[in-house]
Length: 495
Picture 1: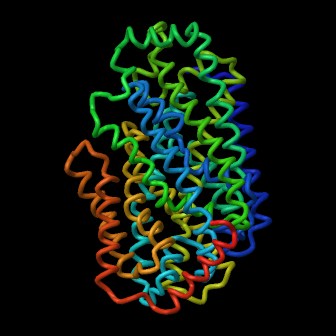
Picture 2 (picture 1 turned 120 degrees about the vertical axis):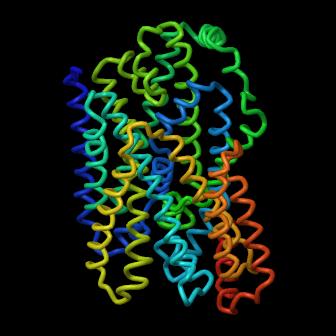
Picture 3 (picture 1 turned 60 degrees about the vertical axis):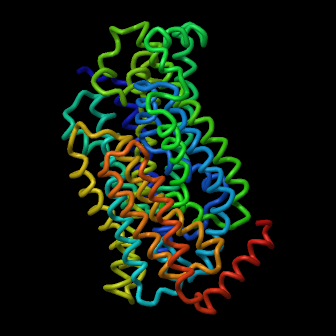
């Protein structure tokens, strides 16, 4: 396969820019707090776009359009569920979590927050939470590496085994070097690229299709069922798709953005920016998948790449319909989506290993410089493990993401939600919620049920928290006093 010079130049410039930002962030990374949360210094704009970019991984430009291309408009319920879940997360979780993590001994990670929120002196909750993060995030990281490898394989025609390393290399470098600030600053650039690509591409495809009405008619000719809001999976499929929104409250890489905001007063502005960006990106992603059906119905001779792998629908449309220079920018947007989420996930895994295992159990008195370097080594270790998991070229991005998303949503979502709003919740209740949520997702997945595993997982975890908390003793007086202080501060700030 001959690779055009514009594509090579655009990709190269983009990768160099991202690595350059990583080395620039190196200068501002002095302590482990800087490396993990950027010193809690993010303004509203960066908080919003960093949260959005870290959330919307390669599945936004590959997995979701591919699902819509294959099944039709019924897959749009995923986007609707995510939009609702994100709004709830921004409106009810972001502000309280920002205040509580600072009050809880300036917690840097989710396990660290749980430990201090519930006065878990024997650190069992920290250990179990960190293990859950490592298990599901390793799968999540693998999904990003698969997406990056698929992109490089489709664009440059190189073997999947080489594409794995090319797709992950730059992300590993700037995350390893610059930490949280590098990830957040690159996220802002990447979010801008993503929204540009997702707004421009469907407009051009629509023009090539001859307008909206003609596009709908072409889809109907392929399969009228692809225009039905209730697809072959019926109501269960709709519930499963909407249930993606439940996952937001338990995603450590998104919650870290709330924890890193410079002030709780920044959150409302960030919510407006973040939700607007997300709505437009979702609309573009859904449109690419649906309009792609119409385009390849009219141009079946060009559908070779998509027939091999439906998740290449965006790549195929971009390379066939755009000038090579513009196509290079659009391809960089896919890489941006992959890199933004992968970098956040690597950093959260690194923080769990460094803060919650290394410092928590092995080296309690470790210095800041030592912790930063251990954190960098952990980024590299998790990246290599994820590349090994992603080595199967037949892996599908959306399936990997859905499993990890459900795992975090069920294990942490109910615990985070109730810890912020229920004073009576206990340490044992939180521990039961994490364990029951994670195990339910793992076991339900094995049943082969069509109901998305996050639904039973979220319900089971919530019940476990409530029952175990009510059966146990009241939380310690200091824990209740901290809850009241946080509640008073939130009321003072309009929450």
